[in-house]
Amino acid sequence: MKKTQITLFSFLFITHLAWGQQSFYQKLSNASIELTKQNVVYDPSYYAIGYPNGDVPSDKGVCTDVVIRAYRKLGIDLQKEVHLDMKAHFSKYPQKWGAKKTDKNIDHRRVPNLMVFFARYGKVKPDSDNPDDYQPGDIVCWDISDGRGVTHIGLVVNQKSADGKRYLMVHNIGGGQVLADCLFEFKIIGHYQYQK
Image (tube, rainbow, N blue to C red):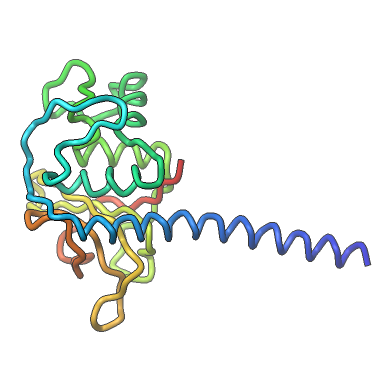
């Protein structure tokens, strides 16, 4: 009888843990979809913003702002998280912009910086061509320039493509924060899950 109780308790505990993770990523998916209801103009301008929890004007943004805003809806401030990690480990982040120190206004709004952060603190998942490897709440990064260094980022959400073969993405590549069937449109260079 005791062994049965322990087995049942273990099953319930594991189920509770799995449900908790699914719940977070489902919430992230929902937050991403909610962003598509906002009218946002693609604007890559540099903005001086507050810290922590700073944001560019709510009607403006780029691809990284989709990810930042979705996580912020769940109480996670990537501006702060990335800044603190870059401040402590600056040399681990890309040096391609010529910066000698952190910049709270822009560091978290750069795809390569987010890729480093998610690789350091999240789960790195395979960059595969199998749609089943990409689940709601996953973060996907692409090279949209055939190796010339133009990167892009979006979130996998819990809505399927018209043919039902893959999940859709929420991203902003120039037309605002939109829901799109674009998972395999570009070369995938990063695939992550992140939950603080």
